[in-house]
Amino acid sequence: MNPMLTAGRPLIASQTLAVLLLAGALALGIAFEARMGILMMVGAALGMALYHAAFGFTAAWRVFISERRGRGLRAQMVMLTIAVLLFFPALSAGTLFGREVTGFVSPIGVSVVFGAFLFGIGMQLGGGCASGTLFTAGGGNARMVITLLFFIVGSVIGSAHFTWWSGLPAFQPTSLVHEFGAGGGILVSLALFAAIALFTVVMEKRRHGQLEEAPRINVHSQRWLVGPWPLLFGAVALALLNFATLALAGRPWGITSAFALWGAKGYEFLGGDVTGWGYWQTPDNAAALRASVWSDITTIMNVGIILGAMMAATLAGRFAPSLRIPLRSVAAAVIGGLMLGYGARLAFGCNIGAYFSGIASGSLHGWVWLVAGFAGNVVGVRLRPFFFTGGPSQPARVKGS
Image 1 (cartoon, rainbow, N blue to C red):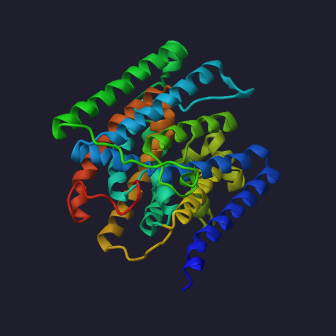
Image 2 (cartoon, rainbow, N blue to C red):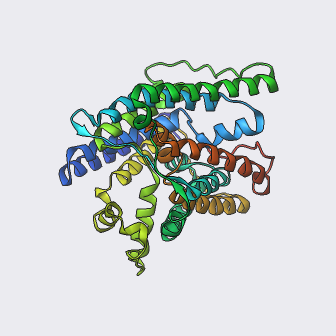
Image 3 (cartoon, rainbow, N blue to C red):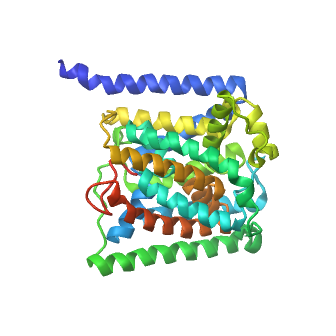
């Protein structure tokens, strides 16, 4: 086969995806409003950043738990630092560029602790978190498509049980921005980020004697398209794109509410009825269920993430789906996906909506999610040998998961 023709295929495929993305964004802008199309483009940028930087929450936590390597966790602290510096003043003012903005601030209770813990186990068995599932599935990992499918199923089941769980003991939503103001909330948050980063440094040096060096990547103009990106570039990009989401959507980046919506609409298509469930009786959720799925901001951003990751994978020449998946790995994807979906509904979000965007919103719920979710990851890492060969630290066959 002609090598030039083979080399040109990724470029042709990526150009086709780019045209599809632009057409979709334009159609959304015409059918609804311009910002909807722009938000799909923001989603695509998130997908590319996640893929090229291999920015995974699951792998970062697994590597720290099993090997005490903290580079990924420290990158998350950089991402959160940039986010609170941008978010807190805007949330305190209540407006951003003339648009009313609100954060993700949720109650803290039994459902959050159990849901985040369950989600954490699901991260390690499913092979990814919410963002990781989307960008790795978009990047061509067939196993993660299974995780995504059962993530959606688990989300529907979680929405069916949501009323019971939300009735359990809980504290009222608490925001650092409201309690301490923007400046005070930033200082408290930065102190916590620094403490976590310092803890990872101490633990890594205690185990290995020195910190792991970041891979040296020669960044040039072409590298932005084909990757890979330095991990810290991914952290900065995710923080800035989340802020762009806040400016355009009036609220931060989220992922999993769309999974519940997709599953509910699919269930109704098959003849089921979810309108009697408490979760779907809240005004916002009831309106989303009645409307077109394409009017849902989270949906269009998720689609953008998938397309963006797919473009990144094709440009890098790595889009090569394989259906040769070991049976145990399939079982882990099914179980992990169900845990991810169910846990996200109970905990008012996932690693993005609850952890990243929750902490960026100043919500104490985000910090509780972090602790419970990390504890779930500890258990999940211990369970991995039952499904994957190698051991607790055996990486998933997913880039950045």
